[in-house]
Image (cartoon, rainbow, N blue to C red):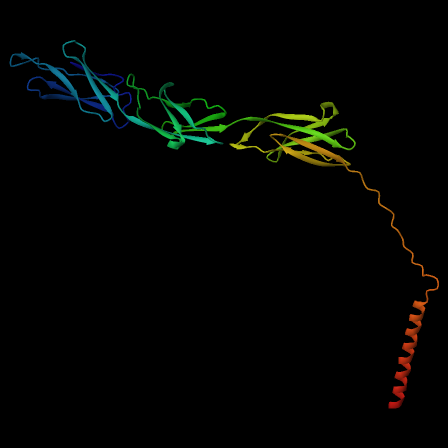
Length: 318
């Protein structure tokens, strides 16, 4: 009688399990008659020289296999068919796969994640803020029950409008699904003149302070232009667009507006002022006015009197 171990039986046996222990069971009192190790490299064995009768009755032989961890054992066949018994072991290991949802930029209300097994959808889940954008797919078979191959698990996301999707990780480490917000904007600019109109003006466009484009405005384009197809976000944050004008000699520049409503760049002619001539005032004494002369003469006489007094005083004391 031959015992076969199907190729799928030990397809996924780990390195520590090198064989299956199969026992031949004798119908006579149901005793364990003989045991044999069936190895991976030689997955079959034939029990030979077995007694056919006992006490005048034909013996019925069956087989039994010791349990192997993480495997389900199935025995088929019989001793009379000439094909013997076949022992099939199916791996029953289970795995869990965690997933995490991340947003670069503002999030949406939900996102649906699909779990694929060998490229075919096996399960799905809708993530929300309420579950903190996380989930774990549990009790998943590690190996295919039909041929024993290791199942390849991947994930995919139902398209979220306005976002790019990136998926990283593995079934063993878990998957991270990152959605980065996308969008396009346009920035219009208009040039006006106060005073004499110039020939042209060059306008520079900046995204978060870094120049990304430039245009020369003139009468030919009606002093207007729209910067188009500009990224609205970078690393999940909305980009701030501003404009600057190259200096136009003889004009003062004023910029009003914003990127959403458009910018207006006004150049006002800077007309220099003509300096006025300084006025000189000449003071001429009035004819017949002797008040200043009398004051000066009086001061001279008083000074002379003080001087004579001091001299006489000095002589008396001498």
